[in-house]
Image (cartoon, rainbow, N blue to C red; front, top):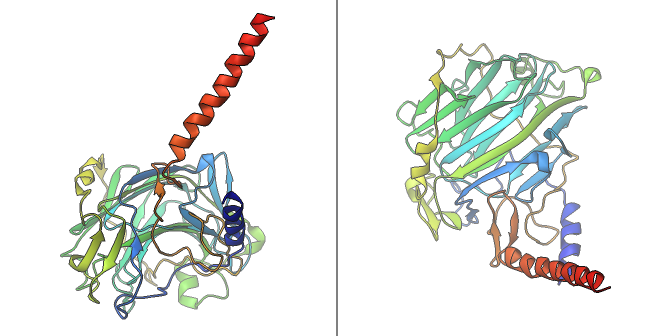
Length: 367
């Protein structure tokens, strides 16, 4: 059993995946899409302690004392981490240092299978700005939803950014200061994000000469890769799912939150935890969006993408974009997927080691 698990894990490490800026099965158009794995709880992941298996990696992020680093050194690179779970309303708090470099973009993206999206992005060309954005149901007919917000130098120090998302409003904050509140009523018609979201973050080059001119202009490129590599660093992330259950299932093709079923739980079953968010102040009004306006989150496909965090054992052809945690496995508060009996199995081993140590001491004393 242990040998076969190792083989599965090794095979999964070699599985090629692409960054998900699309939906492989869109519930707006298909009724047979698989249910989304639910987080259903709160986790805190400290990347200074290394990788966790509840996130799939692409583009070879690296780990060190500061956390996980996403480096862009050449055209087409877009390193990222993507959660293997979804949240149905919730809070994401991330501590990061944005990447430098004209045209380089550091991104935090929440995205659903229906292509609802909530973004925060940092442009390497301006270290005193963060952008907030949203999209609903993949509608990109307009790009007028983004706003730009002033910050301290976000490339020189770690700062905490928060997206707090309910059925009624989305609150964006920087180091405890609210910079934007979007209500469901204020969102464009039928565009308020309201379906289960994956969480992904990483860096990419919006100023890549291979991109469309509008994207290059927005990213304030072009990017001069000879000045790289460019590094985004994430120290930790805390994620709270405001709903409970094992998985989230679409019951129709509307994409509206009232049609989402929480299997084994309840939509908004953890909503009481939303009150734990504390903000110290509200920022001044946004600075406005210079032309061209803000596009969708651009963590894109990377030809070097490989799944380096595989979650529970699965077949080599599996994609880390859905499914359920199998029976006998669970998520812990550190974002690690572990066997249900892991804690119990450790105790006897510890006791055995302790017993051997005590017997050794007794034997020495007896001499």
